[in-house]
Every structure is written in C-alpha cells, then in structure tokens.
Length: 275
Image 1 (cartoon, rainbow, N blue to C red):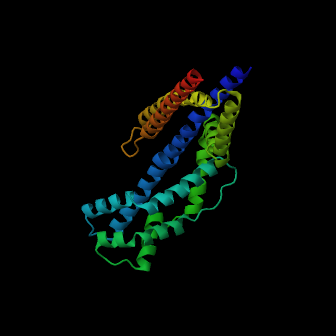
Image 2 (cartoon, one colour):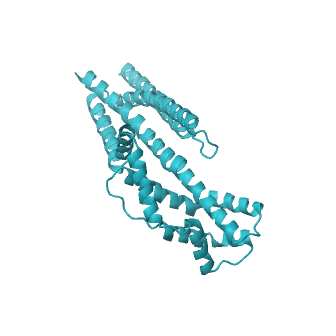
Image 3 (cartoon, rainbow, N blue to C red):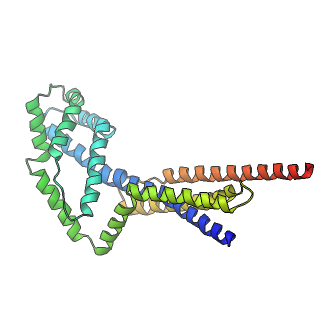
C-alpha cells in the first residue's frame, strides 16, 4: 500500500514539476512575446509617424535610431505589461473597465522626451507633447475604441477559443501557482514519511525530476515550433530556450540527488559492515 501511495505522489510531482514552468513559459509567450511585442511595435509605429508629421525634416536614420531606443526602453515594457494583463482580463470577464491610456502615453512621451529631442534636434514643449499625443491617438476616444475592440474580439471568438482563454486565465493566477507549489511540498513530505531509510525520498524526487525534465523540453520545443509556424512573422520569434534551460537544470538537480542517494547508500553499507 505504501508503495502504491508513493507511486501516486511521485506522479503528482511529475505533474506539478511539469506544469509550473510550462505555465510560466506560456504566460511569458502570450503576455510578452505575442501581445506585448505587437503592442510595442504598434506604439513605436504610431510614435514614428507622429514625429514625421510634426517634424517633416526628420530623417529615416533618426527615426530608426529612435525606434531602436524605444524597443529596449523599460518604460514601454512596463506600459505593455500593464495593458497585456488588462486585455487578458477583459477578454475573460463580462465587464470591461475603463482605461486611461492617453495619460499613460503622455507619461511615456514625457519620460522619453530627452530621446525625442536628440532625434529631432528640437526642444519639446508641453504643448508639443500634447500635439504628439493627439497625433498618436489620432484624436479618437481611446477608451471607446478599446471597448469596441474587446467586444468585437469576444463576439468573433469561437466557444472553443473562449474556453481555452478562460482556462489560461485561471491557471496563470497566483493562487493556482501557489496551489501547485503547496501540492508539491505536501507530496514530498508524505513520501518522506512513508519511505525508509530517512533519505530515500530523494530518489522519488529525482525520478519525478527526470521525467518532468523530458516533458518540459518536449512541450517547450513543440510550443515554440507550432507558434513560429502559425505566426509567420519576423516581429515575433518564439524561443524554446527558457524551457530547455529549465529542463537542463531539473535534469542536473535530479542526477545530483541520485548521486547523493548512492553516496548515502555506500556509507550505510560500510557502517553495517563495520558493525
């Protein structure tokens, strides 16, 4: 009976060890690589076009320099993170909350004022910032446009797609991740209590780690391959490297645990031999 329970709990560990990094990887892909990258490129595009309209003398080299600076800008990354989380939430709830993107864009322009001045070679006044903001937003009601976009996306989304989105939103919550971690800890503790001698539980951890490492590498490679084929764009490139690194670390830790178990077994045998 104890062996059966340990087997079940080891399987649970395989599940949690695999699911935790997979969820983190999926969240990174959706929020940062896909929605975040597309959103960032759209903001950069609108900013470049607005600067060209406001400063006709600006060169293509200057624009490219600005775009390169903005792509590595921490401010725009924070802006994208804020709105990718909101988009995912609004797509999976009935009520769409108001946004204040105009104020956020104004803050973004103000924080990058020095870079814009260097590119244009002109001082940017508060009035000019307001003009740039009008150009970027094209004098539209951004809040109304955003709500319309979300509503259209929800209405055009098939039931299967909505179900997948709802599931994604559920499993990426902090509570779900904490639940997986607690489940892992409880499983390890029970295995340790059921297994003798006292250190043998590390073998179960090692086995779960090795199996999980293989699953993680396979899942990461498959997700990256499928998405890169499906997206077919140079703007977004999905890399499996985070999952492969996680898999490698997990495999290494598992091997170390097996070695530790072997060393403890050897010491135990020598102790019994001396006795």
